Length: 67
Image (cartoon, rainbow, N blue to C red; front, side):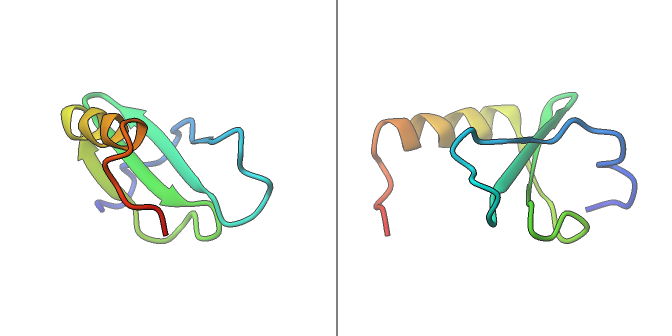
């Protein structure tokens, strides 16, 4: 990820996060960024809004196997 792209964003966590290693999500323009709360300075995944919506829909519909 380009340095500085995630500066000043409002990162959000799931209400189910209990202080452990959680996923954080932020939106900027037409992209969604995802990172680990345990390593906020580490790698950040970047998705288009459309791709993110498809993934969330798949999770809600149970299309992914739970491990």
